[in-house]
Length: 295
Image (cartoon, rainbow, N blue to C red; front, top):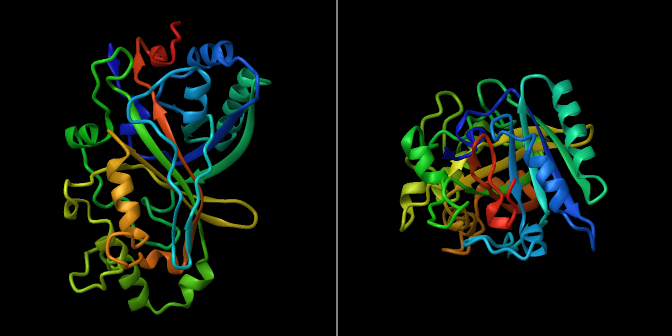
């Protein structure tokens, strides 16, 4: 049986850990990748493969590419590609630490662990700004349609493309805004999450209204708040059948469509951005045949 990694379709967990790895120059990744695939089920750990690893394998994934660099007045959207990404999902932060250690041991020394971010569910699924996140997420069959890539090549059907960004919030700046300013920045009322029809064109909801694009730009968002001892923000994660919908939204947010930048940039900024191809699950494990690997 072939299907999309189930962790993509399930709601966000109470806790998560994100791992990003780079590939050491001159190393052969085949053996550790096969060992990793043997312990991943796509449900409690979602696996993503970056373009650098795909290129190192001499493979070609249709639709895969590097994360774009976008700049606008006072805004910079960086690209920080990685070879491999693991999204660890669960209810026990301690168990996530040990699972991450296991994955690191499997990949050492061919891969280097470059980035670890711990995330959590806040309240009922809110961003740290206090506003609900992912309100317009597609559900059911529509969610699978938005997230799952379609292809007739072996190993392509059931895969997905993931856009991952780490945003750092200036919560002090956000709290200095009046309640009305905050609502107009998001485009929804904090009190009842209802959309504000006469919100400014810079409001985030208006910038990213998925049905307002041509073609419609639906993605499946699975974002979670994160924090460390010094900073906090949002790990934005969006899955799609391609990167087109995400890029359409990002270009509009940065003002590349009409010169209007998203009001979110008043209090938050992205510091990392990467694209990944998430292979399908076949017989309970990631199908890496598109990379030329067969377990």
